[in-house]
Image (cartoon, rainbow, N blue to C red; front, side):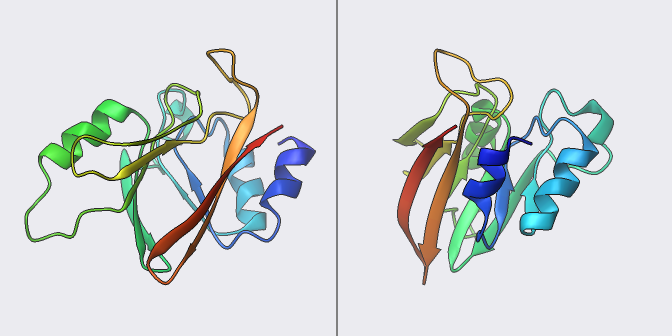
Length: 145
């Protein structure tokens, strides 16, 4: 993993990975920095047995729904069970292009951190740092590497 990425992640309490992890060694390296919640991307065949298609994780009172593809997020939200609280933030990765917008279904904030290994659409290698506390997403900082 790029040294700049490791330095940017130092001090993180949790790492969310939206797929295309690549190898078990990268996942293991991330876990030396902080606990990791990762989902399976379309390039994660060797890790398919250990990564789910989506994850719902709550950190500091903020619920994150993580998928690889935006289309999967749309499907999950359109079939959300009424008795379950909606997520506050959706994290996806498939396009490898950094994005931050309000989603039409559920009105949740959607974010794509970009990619450390295969940026697309003219973007640079990137990751996203989120600061959450007491049920609120306080800050989202895109880090270009």
